Structure formats: C-alpha cells, structure tokens
Amino acid sequence: VFFGPLGDKAHNLCAYFAALPGVVPCRDGYNPATWMLDVIGAGTGGAQAEAVDFVSAYKSSALAEAMATSLDGALAEAMAAAEEAEETAGAGKELACNAPFLKQVALLWWRMFTEYWRTPAYSLMRWIIMSLLSAVLGTLYLQQTTASAADVQSRVSLIYLL
Image 1: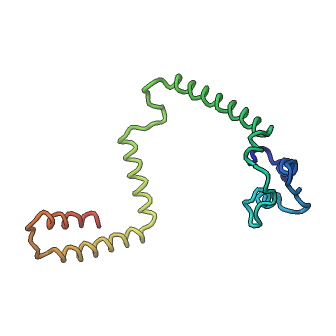
Image 2: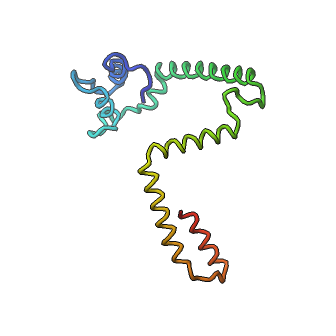
Image 3: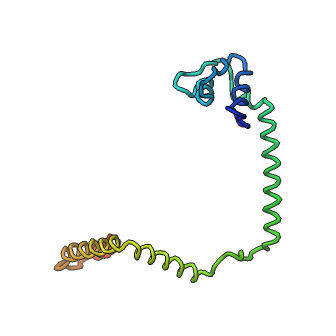
C-alpha cells in the first residue's frame, strides 16, 4: 500500500495517506508506523477509512510509477552486469576463486578438527555417550541369531544410531 522514501519523521508516508479521501491525518507526537497500520486496518483498532481501496490507490499513484521505473532501471543494469560477467568468465570455465575438490575436503576436515579441538569437554562427552550406547546396544544383540533379513537389517540400522 506504500513503497517509497519515508522522509524525515515519515513525513512522506503521512502526506501520502493523508491525501487519500476518508483518511484521518496523523496526530502530532503519534507514531507514524502505528498510525499507518491503524489507517489501513492492520492495527489493533481496525480500519479507519473503510471506503478506501489502498492497493488500487497506490497502483494509480506517482509513487508506483516511480518505483516501477526505478525497478526497470535496476533490472536492466543487473541484466547487463550479468551478461558482461558471463562473457568475461567464459562459458563452462570455473571461476578463479574455486579451489579443487580435494583441497575443499581437506579444509573442511581441518575446520571440523579445529572446532572439536577447541571444545575438548564436548568431544569427551560425545565419545563417552557413543561408547555407552555401543555397549548397551551391542549387548542387546549379543546372543541373538540372524535368521532373517529383518534381523540383519535391525543390526545394521544400529550403525545409524551411533
């Protein structure tokens, strides 16, 4: 219902809505954002101007035309920049900032190692819980036979729990 520069102390917002028929102007010292929400019916008090269709009023305003012109210009600039970047990078070439796959894997492993090394209490607790769970779940299946595929599947699924 409004898109544009707010102005100092939301003067532009207040002037835009106050110019619409049936809208009560913003009182001095009242929060313009709260006033705008009250006017359009999104506030706690309900709509003050029932007869105004704010969407169609905005679509036919000079603000909407200025926004559309601004967006068209920004889109044209972005498209030109994207085409220029595509031409300079070349089709199918990797960017210069990409690292080889094995280098990325090594860096990720190092980062993970460093993170766990910085929190030894967390790592120790993880190993203790994993060991206890392994012992408990291992003893559950210690003397059982693998007579069917379901038995094997239930044992293999324990790996995902740990």
